[in-house]
Length: 251
Image 1 (cartoon, helix red, strand yellow):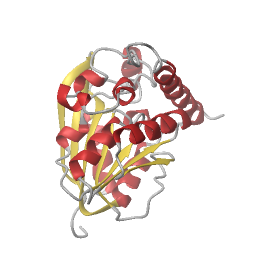
Image 2 (cartoon, rainbow, N blue to C red; image 1 turned 90 degrees about the horizontal axis):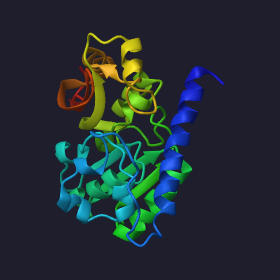
Image 3 (cartoon, helix red, strand yellow; image 1 turned 180 degrees about the horizontal axis):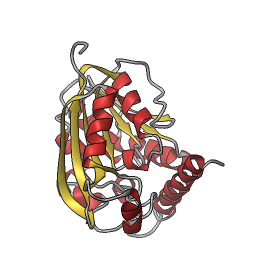
């Protein structure tokens, strides 16, 4: 396997194991136990009232570094796509925000996470939520069909971020927008220094710098780019909110 393929398989195995952990602990007397992650990641980044409205398994499987639904400015009737949707927490929250006239899609490559997400959808009664199998580098949706793309600490896991940005741009309608939570590195940190602070599957080594992130979005065609750090996840590494817009008309 190539290094890229090996990294993707490592990521898949990590999240498959996380899904199994939540599923297997669901029969415990006190409900599923949250997957253990470092401080700065996980379900505590969501408001208590949001967590309380969701199936316990969706909350336990949360492995993100932020709450993209809170910053994506979702509106009634929006069509939302969550890249790397995992156990479905952000899809289910989005489905509530967009209402019955909207639709929330989740995209994930891991069978175990998709199975968990489908079970959580049934428990939540989210009839306007749909989960798709695939990779974020090749989104299985037509062009110009999504109003908002969200993601929670997943873009940094990709080994082909230009493809992720290009595909995100493709599926968005003109005037569509992104609201992403991701790990971003200070500009002075080299790739080697990022790797010293954590591994790829731990959402650290694969992170782009602030400048690299901005340039990647610009190269895909995005405008109105904002990258705002929210909290530290390692020395010189930050959880950040990334916002950008697909122009309403060709530039």
